Length: 138
Image 1 (cartoon, rainbow, N blue to C red):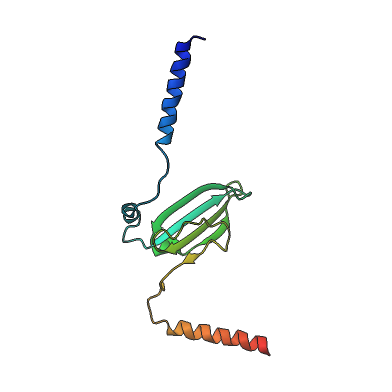
Image 2 (image 1 turned 45 degrees about the vertical axis):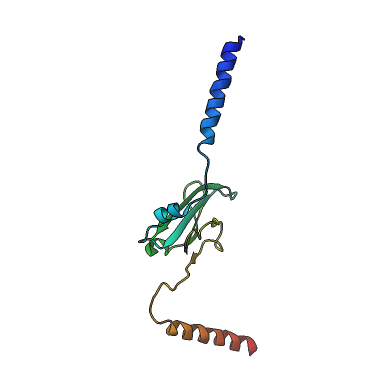
């Protein structure tokens, strides 16, 4: 083989390698976070689709309103036996870990969803705790 075509192939491959390097990932900046998390959406949503073996097939992350976070958890997909786990959280970049099971696929908030007075809920929690405690001590 003559040196001309071999050199042309080498230059072409190095040019392609440089183009592939240009598509590398980067960390988010504050400007990116403000753009990706508009004020009307309060929660970070993650949907993780996995094979039966646990290998990831796809991951979807986006900012959503409350309504899209009301059905978190894991379910078996009808497509080739895949498992789909969904989680939501409140805060900036709170959804870094991927949900892989029911323990991870939760809806975590930093503030109460229902903005009413919390006393009725506190009373029911206290009564439930007392009921369990009394059941264990008797």
